[in-house]
Length: 127
Image (cartoon, rainbow, N blue to C red; front, side, top):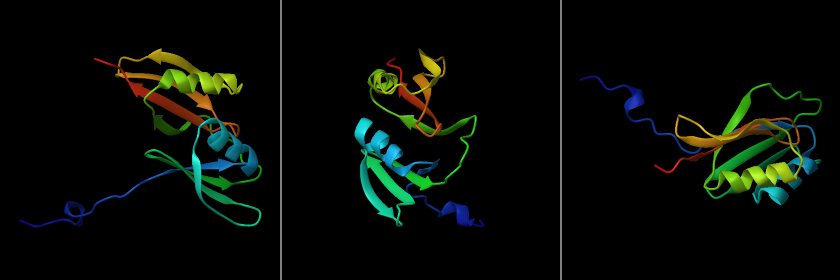
């Protein structure tokens, strides 16, 4: 039997790259409001940053003048979607799709981060 390179190929982590217009504002949101920790940055001024929390990793790239896409650019799973929804609401960020239980098994909502990046957040429904 012939083996394909796909048979032995293994993937490591993959992280969303979010384009942002203001690194300090993005840092304040992801670190200050959501509790991520900065694990790497480079550039003067900072043009790239890696953030981690638990199993989640986000990469921020400074893209001055960037216009956010009108679709979800990342999907984030959490263990308390209601708590995250409250943080987003309290920060005054736009909620694109309201919090609700969906027939595909997730309680979910979609919000825009301070740079307009749409992030879909979900938590598995208890069965």
